[in-house]
Amino acid sequence: MTPLDRWDRARTLMLESLYKPDNHLRSCSHNQKCYDELMSIRDQVVDMVRDMPNPHGEALEFGKKNNHVEPTVTTPNGEISETLMSGALGDFYADKREY
Image (cartoon, rainbow, N blue to C red; front, side, top):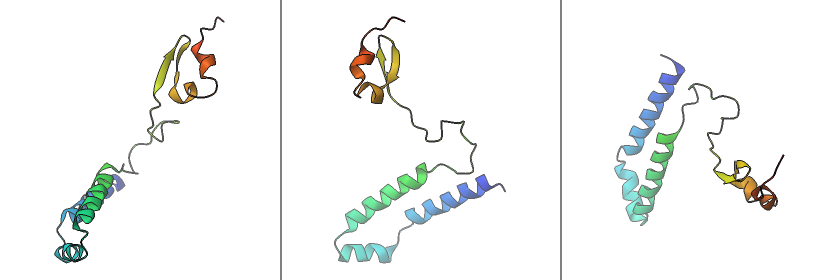
């Protein structure tokens, strides 16, 4: 069994433990009047665990480590990032330049 498979199995077991009703914990949350909040937190944790990338997966190419896609804006000179366009030089990039 590969490290990738072991990690996926461990994540599956973690999700099963989150889905499994814990009557004692739920009873305590009813007594402390925070049952809805407990279930909300549980749902958020389930989503986080479900979306976790397997660290043993295939390595991403250089520059793609964070899986972030920067939105772009089309200017007369081509596309640039929204971050760059929103900065102090946004007006500079918005003007048509001849090179």
